[in-house]
Image (cartoon, rainbow, N blue to C red; front, side, top):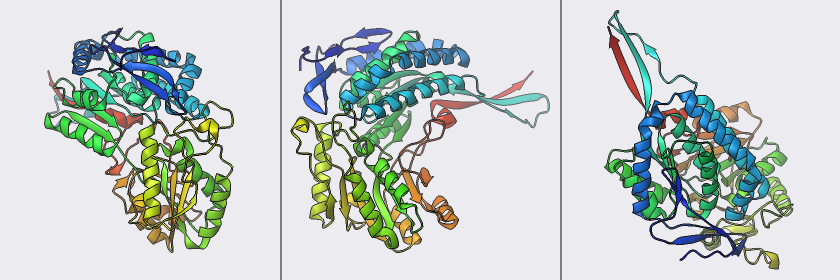
Length: 489
C-alpha cells in the first residue's frame, strides 16, 4: 500500500550509511496487535534491487572493516550499546506496541541487547587462534580466524531486539559486514536498533537494513552469490528453504528453528515452584518463545495436586495491553499467529483432549481490537495428538500423566524437536538421568524451559537447528573460518 501518515511515521532502509526509501515506492504498516487500528509506523516494502544494493555495500566495506583491530571494532559496539541504553525506554515501548509483549519484558529484552553488545565488544580482545607444535623444529605453526565476509541476518518477531543483536554483534566483532532482514511485524523496532548502531559511527556499508517480505528479501539474501553466511531464526518450513538455498551455492548457514519443549514434574518436586516455572516458561510472552514450555509431563502421584495448583494460579493472571500496569499477558503478535493458536486449540478438542482452562479470546470490550487469547490448558493429552507433537507458539499447555521417570524422559524425547527441556526434582538420580538421556541442546534443572544466558552457547538438536550454536564464545565457530599458518624462515 502507499505510504500514508496515519498514526505512525515512515521508516526507511539503511544502505551504505544512508537512510533511503525502497525503489518500489511502497510501504506497509506495522500495527499494534493490542489495538489493530493503531499504526506503529510504516516500513519499506523492498525488492531484490535493495537486496543487491545492500549486499554490494556490505561487500565493499568488508575489507576495510576486517582490517581494523578487534579492539577497534569493539569500541564501535560499546558506543552502540551506549546509544541503545540512552533510548531503552523508547525502544522498549516501541517493542511492546509493535509485537505485544509487556513493557517489563520489553525493557528486560532491550537491556539484554545492551549487555550482548558489550559482551561482544569485549570479545574483540580475546584470542582467535592457538600455536600448534610442528614436526619441523625450525618452523612455527599456528591458527588464526578470518571472517566469512558478508553475513545475512534473518530475524524473527518474537525477540525483535535480542535476536538481531545476538546475531549482528558477533558477526561484526569478528570482522564481517551485515545485511539485516528483520521480521516485517517488528521492522520499526529493528530500524531503531540500526539507528543506535549507526549512531556509533560504523563505516558506511558495515551494517545495512532492508525490510520487506521474507519470500523476496530473506530468500534473496539466501540465494545471493556475495552473501557468504546466513543466520536465520524462525519456522522450520522457512528455515529449511533458507538452508537449501545457501547449501546450493556453498554458503555457510545457521538455522535456529522450532521447539516442543517438555517440563517433567517428578513426584518429589516442589510443586509450587514447578507451577510457577510452568506458567512462566509456557505462558509468559504469550507462549511466543522457541524455548517455551509446551508439554507438561507429570508423575501420577502428584498429577492432581499439580493440576489444581496450576489452574488456581492461572486464574490470577491479567490479560491486557502490554503498556498497562498490571498486565501479565499481552496479545499474540499478529492475526495469523492468533488464528494458528486457535486452530490448535480446536484440534486438541477434536482429538479428544479435555479443555481445562481458557481456549478462547477474552470477552472484555477493551480487548476487542487486539489479537488476544486466554492461557489454555488441556488435560488427558496423549503423545500422538497434534497439541503434543506440533509447535503451537502460543500460551497452550498440554498435561500428560506418566508412571515412572523412565517413561517421562522417553516421552520427553519423543519429539521431532530438541531445543530445551527442564525437570523439577530433588533426586540426584533423576537429575543425572535427565542430563544424560535428554536429547535437547539446553537442559535446565529446577528452572523453567525458557531462557538462556547470553554468555552460554544456545541451539538445539534434531529438527530444532542446523546443529550450530549461537551466543557466547561459541558464536565464533559460525562467523569465522579457521586458517592454519605454517611459517618457516
